[in-house]
Amino acid sequence: MDKNKMSTPNMHIGCNVNECKYHGRDQDYCTLDKIMVVKHHDAKTVECTDCGSFEIGK
Ligand code: SF4
Image (cartoon, rainbow, N blue to C red):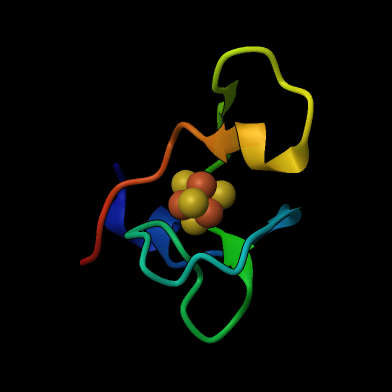
């Protein structure tokens, strides 16, 4: 991943998971061009969905 690109928040993907290496730090946006949202079992509540692109820390 391009380092400069990582620091540019993607205003189309809001996210407050600041533990993730792709988080926009001072802004609550993801810095990836796209993410993959995944589900756990049958998605019946919001808790059953997750960001599949999450990676821990920097
Ligand atoms: S990869 Fe997912 S968890 Fe990480 S900053 Fe982007 S949207 Fe948030």
